[in-house]
Length: 77
Image (cartoon, rainbow, N blue to C red; front, side):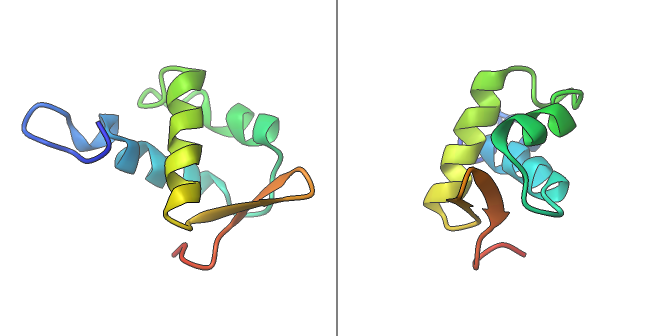
């Protein structure tokens, strides 16, 4: 589920969903504002997958959280 496999398509993996979240994070946003931007994407079919992708992105250093806002991390592209 984290990485794509023969069975799990890239767009359905946390890596793919994380890429969509990072694209939407052009400026620092609150969690609810970011959710509003990405919830219409068909790959992100639930708030649960959205939160899991945020967890994954935070663990790998792609995003950071400060003062109630999510920022692109130092490891983000």
